[in-house]
Image (tube, rainbow, N blue to C red; front, side):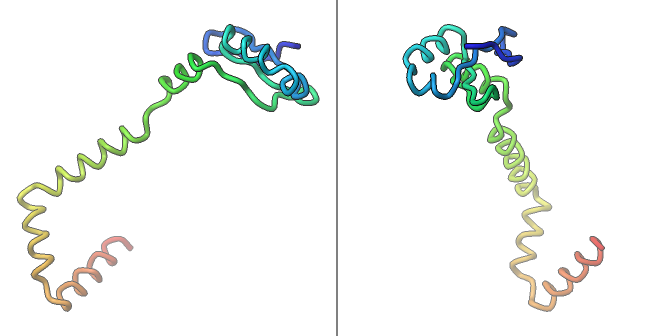
Length: 114
């Protein structure tokens, strides 16, 4: 086993093992991952995979922003804007519009963008 220049979230060097050793001695490697947080698995001296402990995995998840929280906030803001009196009136007007009025509004919107 050797040590790569890869470090875990605590700054400790990550131990590596060859893919063959990983296949043959998974139990030992699992114990090392549990003790050290992670083990890099190498093939021809290149890191090819990483075995993480759940603690290390959870720590990585906690450091990353939750994309659904961001989208939820954006969605909630959009819904709030749709609930204003002006937006509700515009929605009612949209459903009452004739095909000609809708066509005119579409052309006007395209001109504003271009």
